Length: 331
Image 1: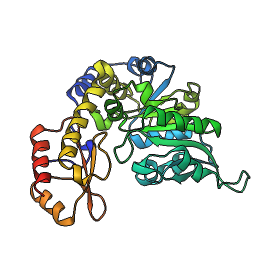
Image 2: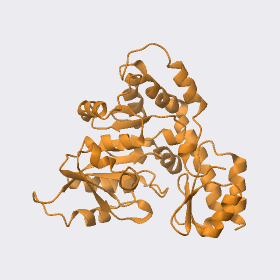
Image 3: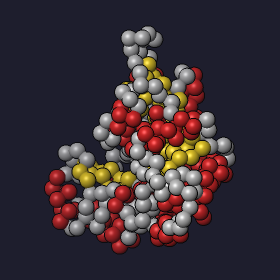
Image 4: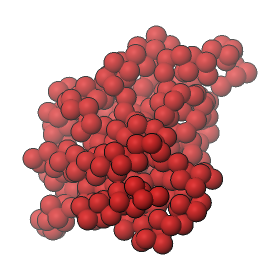
């Protein structure tokens, strides 16, 4: 019974069907009809002009988006637990040609204007120190907590006042929107670039870089090619994204994953390390308790010496969720 990651989830049948339907002659790379449709589809979704590029991974989506706003001698300010800091093997430095990450604090892996200021203010405005050029936030955060629209707006106001770009890592953006019950535009706020995740939510291998600075797409297309992410049969990438957008499948899947996490969180309320707002549950759990859960057939990640992370997916089976809830209640 799998609770390690939403990356282990099945590909949604609608995505497979869309990829099969795309298996016909069309222009190569990103010149096909499906790829060309993405700008308009996301413009409709967010209610403002945007340019959209597909890539294969969330790491590439994050780093290429940041490369559109940060020079090699600059820096990105992010939470010290951010995925770009903890889980991308130095990829930001690679894609950004040496740009640095400046780390900020904040509860539940969420930064605030105050914690960003604490990271930035000590930096002298001179050539001897790396200067920040962008802020990156994660929606939902690495601990499954969601930025409210007013929180994103406050960070955006801070970034604008400092002349910084604003990027949103949206690997679980769908789960954040599902939790908030608001529009995608409200959940994203006035960001400059969004890495819109699909792989964790029913996709097979496609993520979207959504650029609200449309002109930035011109250079980013060259960066994507240079990075090896301009796939020759890009229609299969675009087909996945189009399938997920149709009928708000992306949102339906996220609601299903969130509901499973909420059911587990309700039983484990006394153990919760962070509020359950998306599809991740972090609990206190001793080594002996973790051993007992694994003996019962549950697969998950340890999270430090006395904690565990449980992640639910769009296709979480009700009987597995119920079994885990019973097991947690019986610890």
